[in-house]
View 1: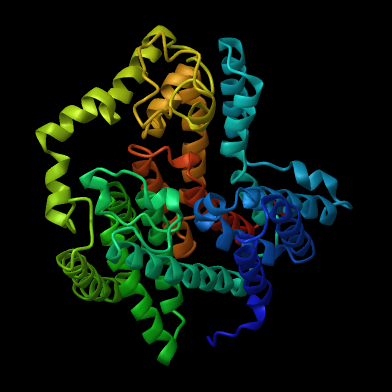
View 2: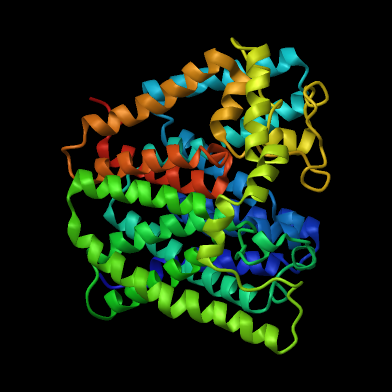
Length: 477
């Protein structure tokens, strides 16, 4: 398995074009960069998917510097969809073949939208929320109807690893400079609590998003290690060490729990124990060679008089102690996760059958548009410095917004999906991995709005789409 640059030429050009776009005027970036990347994606759709892998994880950084780059991802996705329509022009009926789990998903979207409209949510907010749920599903729709092979999966993996190296090195620089280097001014000047200051935010702009991204990267490194030999294998070990070390420095407890859940389940189902050796070795190396030296470096930088806002380097033991700290638990009860869950059940108690609809409780739309029910339930808009909140729990959002009917539809979407994987569990390790990924995603939903996190759903639906393509879900019988 020799790595060659030729298959990645368009990706490299696209990445360089994004960098150029950072210094162009907003409108020129919007038209020129988005236009060129969109055209390239239409004529080279698989390269377009790789461009999304480069763009989506660093999108927060890009648009913070130049908002003119904000439509690149949507534009590439929709032009890829148009290419699928074009390629199926002689068999247009194939475009309307859906699995049962998809119909449950569509019904959930339609129901939540209808109830939200009846509650008084604006059309703009409803469109915003639907887009959040649908945009990454479209990648599943697109990829599942492509002809995906082993070479495509190798390209997918190498692009992710290359970007992860860049993001990880940047994150270490961020940590060592106490958030003063290579960050937009708005990020450097942002006031963070002592709990969050010690965490690496990286180019994704969020430690949890960064950790989830690295979780997928680690899986892809393990995938490549199965085929790599010689120097390539040594480089992959080095990358795995780096990624695990930076993953530790995100202090993302929720992501660690999800990764462990998925990993344990995969090994139990597959009994593919030989992957444990490189994983355990690099976990130790990541702790010793990355985590400990970087934290020691932070202490050294502070000893030289660099202002860290009074915050130290942090530590794993401190992070776990905070989980059960009385002050922290009280804060969560007053304005954090426990508060959202309590309020969500208050909403459900008043609207048990239908909920209050999309755009009313703790979703993406409420961050931008607010909610017509917040005043009624005493939910303040200043919890996050004047912004509305994420529920930080996908399930309480579904319960509050769509009630019992929505819960049934959403459960059907999830359970019908995993049932497909389970029926194929004897057909190699890929179905077993999908089962493990499904459970890891389910656990993540307990503390993230996981189906609204673009970095996560990008990889979930791309991998799921590749699985569907390889299994021939939508081919003619």
